[in-house]
Length: 346
Image (cartoon, rainbow, N blue to C red; front, top):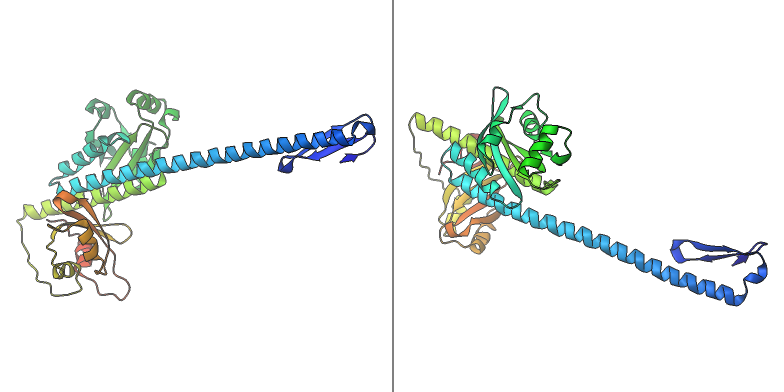
């Protein structure tokens, strides 16, 4: 439109603003001039719309790329945890558990190295490691109360702790170590069970912000499994030191999960029972001659079993998720076993 004296042309450019052109005299804005100005504004609007769409598409593409990358890392990490869990189930000593965990994690692509430390007299002393020389760990001096590292915080609070960008850490020694050993972030995972703490697992990655929310949840679950395995190992060793008593039970309850599976023609062998913080339990069994597809069919009819997944198909090793009893529901042997700290003998 043309407004005022001297005349001013004001032409909208879609949602991107307006073109304002002042002139010395009204005659400067004849019909042809205004038509040309409107055409130029239409062209500008189309170009700006296209630029805006392309920017939105780039943002969406980057978001999708990051989501796919995170999903890929999470899938890879989950596969690693399955492998670690399998090794823990088979380990027959504390040293076997801790060294196997470190070896498996250090060999995994997302991580640089890993170590497990035990708290002794207020200090974290490394007891197992992989991917890093012993000389590096020998220089560590981690006080649970005085230090502010992820390992110390985790040991102090009993919760997972993460240092996200060690190359930017305010502590010069930490920056130097991170640069020297090519890592940028670390996650420290508490190892505990039934109120007893068994140390801290520290996992290092070569990039900043390596440990996303879902990956931290997987690591916490691994920490629970390691804590339970170490507790069970202590219990077995204590029992073995006073001799071993073998107890055989005959269970006739048709609703008992193992009995239900046996009734379906599935011969299972108990390998471990690991309680989780949410009340469920992870039951590890071998079922020779049963395919993963058949196992899914078998557990579909067992009320207390929520999920089943194959850990090592060649060895017929499965992990079954057992839900806790609901209010008013009759408890089963699983509940008594977990309550009294049992379930790991094979």
